[in-house]
Image 1 (cartoon, rainbow over the protein chains, first blue to last red):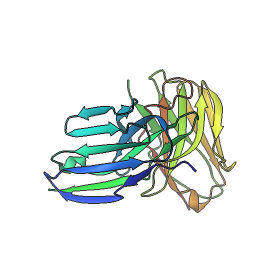
Image 2: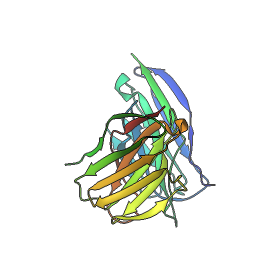
Image 3: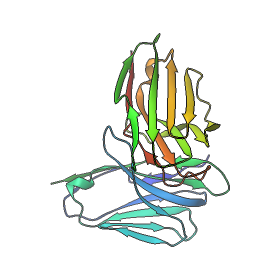
Length: 111
Length: 114
């Protein structure tokens, strides 16, 4: 079974704190996406990482793809209440057409 | 237009009803997807259409019947559902074939089966 495990599962922090969310697998991925989903809404694409070791920045969010393309991380600097939501990594396992979602990280940022 | 739209937003149906969910995109994407999402869980893939042909069915019960009338539209026909089918149903689209990358999601249909 190909799995994308995210950690932590839940995270509640104060406004202004930094945090990192991890997405790990034993499989190699052709590319990996990160999404944020708010309650009752569909996931919204944040970023795609393709190359091993790639780092992408989106304002206060920094995304990294592992050198072996088996893992990824999302770092948020100075979190704000608007960052609250479910963060999902997802991707296509290399050599397959299988698109799988990570187990999700539920983030709550308190004002 | 970078939106995927879904109707209805909410749907309540009995176990003997027949209803349909609709999804539309005008981004020129050639792959469209149906997902089911239970509370506090990640989306689970149900069906994938690539160039208007059903390419993946993730062993979904026959009470769910997808249809892709054209490259912009995707329907999900529902019949004789069970209460455990209550969930958020998400439609998504992506560019070309089975690349799957960068899926754009609609807001979902919240389905309740009584």
